[in-house]
Image (cartoon, rainbow, N blue to C red; front, side, top):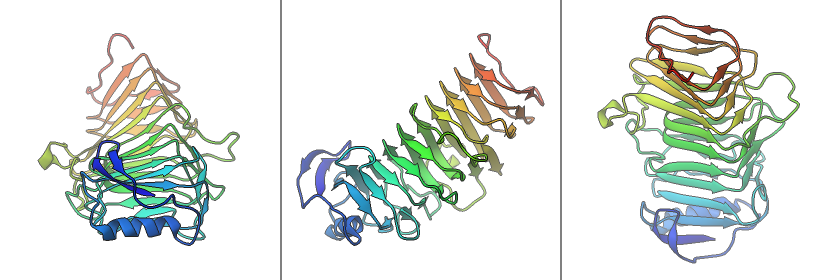
Length: 311
């Protein structure tokens, strides 16, 4: 089912339209295509797709510039809808998506990669929000990846990500892992991949919010809040005037296999957090450390580090 809404905030004041989606050939994609064809989807008229429990062997493709505001709800609760494509990605968007400003998934289990790309410089792709709530991302195949590029906002909330491969966020203005249940499957064989966080201000693919012209300061922000993230430390990279702001709040980050390096012009903010390995601060970087613990050696370079009295 998709509902036409008159209010983009959580899609209130809905008018029922159609039926609940059930498993079939391209069942979810067919509804997405009908929403685009209707010409009704906009920033202020959202569409909510209600999906019945089951396994859907398809790829959801969101590459139509008539899509603005979409929500996908698993009506059977968390894990009741499984996206398990025969090949390719479970969810993707790579072109004609500059108008997709709001995207919400609730209760889905992804057994294929998520690949969300904004294609145009200064794009408003995922400008309002992109939220995956109570969703699970897992598979034995270690090539399964979350890859988000040139997007304004991306958050994984109160769900689980159980994969060995990398999580890639390239020029994402604001992204985060939120909620205490984010963790790796125990026990793990080998070391899970890294978080790859890149702010490249010289690239032609820079999202609207990150752009300096709109007050973004060429900064990409990544937050871990109330989450146990047992992965190798993030790889932070910046180019030109790009920089990252990494926040760990009431959370745990890292495995004892790698050093976290904070590049020049980038920042690390810790609040009630544990960093499980060495931390090296490049000259020109900034570290705030409030009631937190770095398990390993802290290496300072330069004088641009701030340690409040409560550390």
